[in-house]
Image (tube, rainbow, N blue to C red; front, side):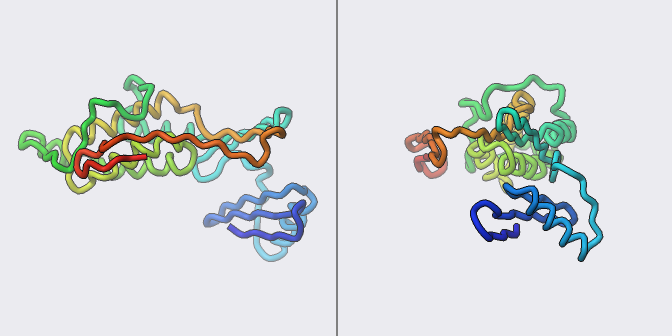
Length: 205
């Protein structure tokens, strides 16, 4: 990301990934200037207002001062890739009955099954969704990512539960809305447990 700060009203943000670029600024005049400058140096194609980048859809409602970022198409592809598109959706990202631990070891009859499970690939897809648009996956994605090296069927079932949760929340994403009365304020929420980790008996906040 590149940042040009001449004054508070004309801060220009330029985000570049390979050959995709986003330019953001309060002033449309400044955006046009940057585009013209770049066109003078590089071969470029102006695609207009951004609607999608890196698997993220950008939705705007200027009448309500709303900007939303979702990954509906990307999540649909992930569900199809792991054959989860027809499963019943879940309301929570993780269930209480999943007691995951490093002490779990694959049973002999599960060895062939576990060998063919695309666990690491699925965890990577979850992590990308979590980082981009779904922070509600932070705990569950972190939990299943701990067992890459010692995998059993229970871990895969837990991961599939998260994918089913994604199916049920495929429309959800990040919503940015202007609130004049709360400008500059950030509200946070915390949920702790006590000695919740089976392996270390550590607490988690």
